[in-house]
View 1 (cartoon, rainbow, N blue to C red):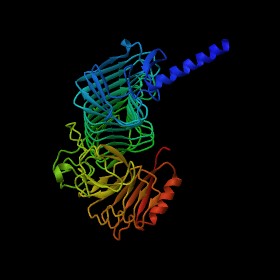
View 2: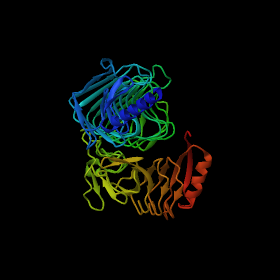
View 3: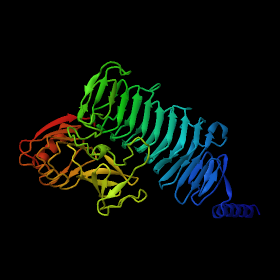
View 4: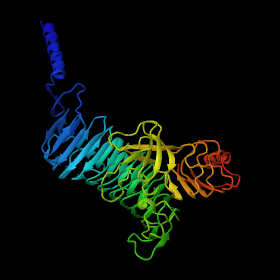
Length: 514
């Protein structure tokens, strides 16, 4: 009889579990009742509310069809939520999610979790847009974060975002800021990434690394990726460094930039715009002039950089050193390094691109596909070569000094620039210098053939493939500055370069950290 009872009890439990999945019976999980789904994981948590599909609550609405979360005067305080999970908003999906800001929104997390996070996405990109504001406060533990994306890109197009956290203000695998007003602070850094890139093309950005309980304190930080500033107004301050980018060179090609710290830069920085360096964090005194198209590696405590306003000098063109044409109202190549061209301080998203084949690739909701050639508003041309990679195909402008970006945003999607296409600059008679970023590993044949005025090539990465006569010119004499962690890698690249350039070429090694 007792054996039959056990068999009956086992059958009842099995039936209950089966029904809970089929008809979504609420089941107990930890200390919370949630609705079970097929995989028992909600797509989204807003506070402690589990969301499995299109839904809404006080101050928020989620559209599952477009994967869009709208916050409209949304307020959340973890201290008022007995079921607080460790994040104000937690997204578990794999598809990219868009957060639209409307009205004034506020998220405050201050619970018992070791890592308190204002907004968290474990494996998907987040795009923030809208005309509203969002203030995030996460200050309970030393590991608290304001906004975190573990595996994905954070793209900020518009809106006002304030993220103040005990540890890191904003963290994502890759970060692209094209507009809006962004303020972020954290003890380790204000805005940072571990292995990805930070690209700022517009908007107003204030990043602060406080450094009160660590020996860090960086405004902008990337340990193994590039940092590029090409537009907008950027202020980065840290107890130690304003910008820390130990394994790559920071590229500043436009915008108004102010960097402050024990030293303004943690590593060498290339700037295409002029400014002033100061030996005090207040920026007092006359300071030391910093010329455009220059590598900065000094002990300045504050650096201020801005495009010249003298129309007889550089106009508003950050990358056309000595080119007085100031064509197309300053939108020359290099004026906005990342081609998500929202660097007009209006905060508007102008991901407008012109398809080189059809001339109508302007729909930001339809990213270009492999094989498409796109000419951006700043006259740079790209060919899509893979899911998230492009080849740089040259420019349609007349800039003398060109800096190729590490990444480019085309119709709302970020692409990494990994190669320079064959004949990209063939017979270009105006270009005098070119900066090639770290992600580029291949240069096609005849890419710089016949560039008789090209005098300086700066290479920040490890280029392993050079096409035939890539840099050959009958009358040219060029100097190659190569950033490499070891002399062995430098020598290997020089050996390949000698086969595709003039005999008169010279080479210089600049060591970078591994």
